[in-house]
Length: 319
Ligand SMILES: [Zn+2]
Ligand SMILES: [Zn+2]
Image (cartoon, helix red, strand yellow):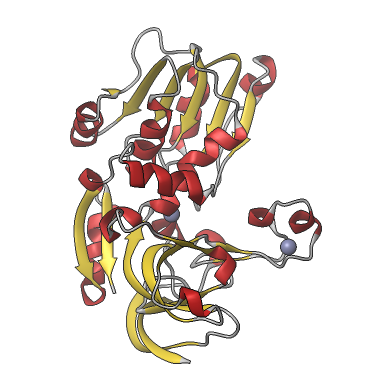
C-alpha cells in the first residue's frame, strides 16, 4: 500500500488530496510519469458515467512493484479495461467488453491523475526506448483511433471524412491518411485546421458544397452532440458512419436517414495498443505538435481550464 497525491472527483468538484490510498492487491503498482487529459475526463466532470474517485486513463509510467519481477522498473503504458476473464464476453476474446469490467479512471477503478496507480499485469505494454514519455502518453487515444481499422474494413478507394479537429480527430486523421484515396477533415478552429494541414491532411472549416451524402466513410469525433447530425448528413447511401464521441448528454437525432440510406453505423471506443505503439515507434504518427502544455498536479485548475478551452489540443499532467 502507498499513499499518493491525487486529483479526486467527489461528483461535484475535483480537488487535490495527498492521502489517496493505493492498495496493489495482485496487480502491478505504477509510478505515473505523464498523464493526458482527454474529452472523456472533461465529460466525467460533467457527470458522464457517474464516476467518483480519481479520474484519468491516459498515461505512461514505471512499474515499481509487481509479482512479475521482470516488469519491475519497466516503462509501461496500460490498457484501461480490466476484465474478469470468466464471463461470456471474455470467453470469446472480447475482454474490452467484459461484463464485469472496471475501467481505469472511468468505472469502478481509480485512474492516473495521481502519483501511483495499480493495474493488472496483463493490461501493461512495455514502451520501446525510442518512444519518450511525451509521445508514449498518446498510446491510449491512438489505440482508440486504430480501433476503427479493426471494426470497418476500410477500402483504399473510399472517400473519407473526419468530423472534428480536436486531439482524437487529429489522431484518427493521421491513422486514415495513408489508407484511403481521399481524406478530408471538417473542423471549426483555424489553429487546429492549420496543424492538420501542416501534417499534409486536407482540412477545412465547415461543410462545403458537394460534401452532403458523398462520403463512403465518415468518422464523428467532435466530442459534441451536434457533431452526429452533421456527420449523418455527409454519409452516402449504404456508407459507414463511425461514432467516437462519448458525451454526458443524450444524442437526439432523426434516425430516418440511417434507415432510408441503409447506413452502417458503428460505435467505437477503446482499441489495440500494439499498432499504436509501433506507429509511435516508427514515427508514422506525429503527436509532439499536439501537446499544448504540461502541468503539475497542484496546477490542475489551470490544466483543466486549458484542456477545456476551444483552441487547445492535448494538455498533460506530470503527477
Ligand atoms: Zn481518453
Ligand atoms: Zn469478463
